[in-house]
Structure formats: C-alpha cells, structure tokens
Length: 143
View: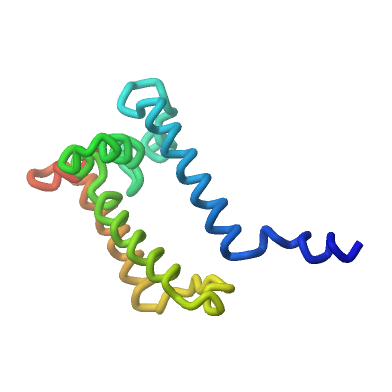
C-alpha cells in the first residue's frame, strides 16, 4: 500500500507536466502537419469569424503553424503575425523556466507581473482591432 502512495501523484510533478504538455504539443503539430489547415474544409471555421465576420486574434494560427513547419517564415507571418512573434517569446520563457534550479522548478510560477499581463492583453486587443480594419497597410494583418 505504501508504494502506491508515493507513486499515486506522479502526474503532479512539474517534469511530468512538462512531458505531457510536450507530447500534446507534438501530437497537435503532427495533426496540423498531416491535415493541412490551408485546405478549405479540413478544419471548422473560427466561431468568432463565423458569427461576426471579423477575425479574432487567433485566426490564421493553424495555417501559420503549418507554414512555419515547412520553413516559410514570411508566409506564416501573412497568416498570423502575432503567433509568429509569440512563439520565440514563449520558447525563451520556457527555457528560462527550465534553466532554474530543480528545487525552484517544483512549482510553476504562472504569475505575470501586472505590467506584463496588461501589456500582453493590450497587444492582443490592439492586434485584434487592427487586423479587422480594411485599409492599407493594415490589411496585411488579416489572414
């Protein structure tokens, strides 16, 4: 009985979380690679786009990821510039988290400083608004 107590919470380990999230990410990218989102009908339409006719901040993300996996950075930027800019930032944050001492890594510190949180929200909202303005040069932000 004692052996089950020590191993029953293995999934609460930050390393297990990292492995699970990595596997889910790899699986999701494999699906995007196998089922091309640039082919109409392979994926459902964005619900926000469907109901409002406007692009959400995430519209074009699957197409951008598929294009990035082919090594076409410029094409990916045409689908969703915010996604392409966010990926290196997320990679640096993840590497920074992994480089901490193992003891510090036991708990994920998911708290953003207030300024970073408000800045991130402002960037997303501004991008959201600008990509829906049908005026050159803002039309390059639409997927």
